Length: 295
Picture (cartoon, rainbow, N blue to C red):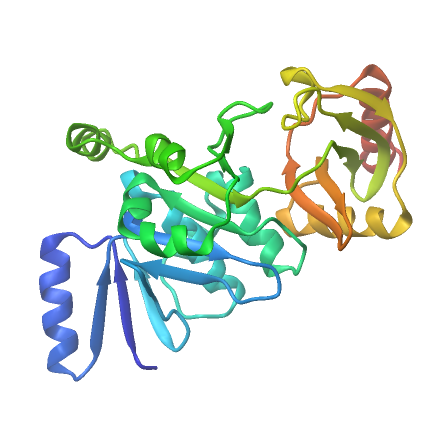
């Protein structure tokens, strides 16, 4: 072990912690989780960026204080450390309720080698601290997502100016976010040009049905945002990847969203509560009854 990474520590804990570790020749790196950006790119290791520089999680003990106002980023980092067998505290954080949302899912899919758009997990604070790193890596347009449903809180961003306007807080807004213990997390993602995507409704690896969702505006593929849809099919290799995606995200009843590209499927989300028609609802009840009541 090279040292200890200490995240979200209160001043009193930090002072005594660092002094004792240093007295024993142990290096302590102190970080605020709200200033950390997580960078995910297919076929490359996850990167954790703090004030423009990478954090070394491997070969360190990672000690978190899970505090309410900075809960999402450290929960994702705890999940990563647990999956990579990196020493950590409070493993309860690896089961945080926010892990059902699409932002956490990007880490889960990435760790299971399932293709996703290149992604940056940020807060408004970490965007400001790591803006140069992010901007130098991005190619516009990009997609900005918060934890909304049905295409809400999702925007196509065409310029640095537009991204700054969405993510930069005033001093008053920053202080209020800290006071309210409400620091939302967002995704900045590579824009995958497409005219449609696929929603695959599944229960425990069984494909109930496939809908091709066709955009009317060149961006939103959500029915709630005006897209059209038609019944379609997917290949067996695509179905197998969808099964792996549900396993990676720990979701039995799922709506798996992906887009076809020349390099294969790219996954957008594994929806934990997909909209269902009466046929699908009946199939779900039938499967549950067969599994639990007719043995």
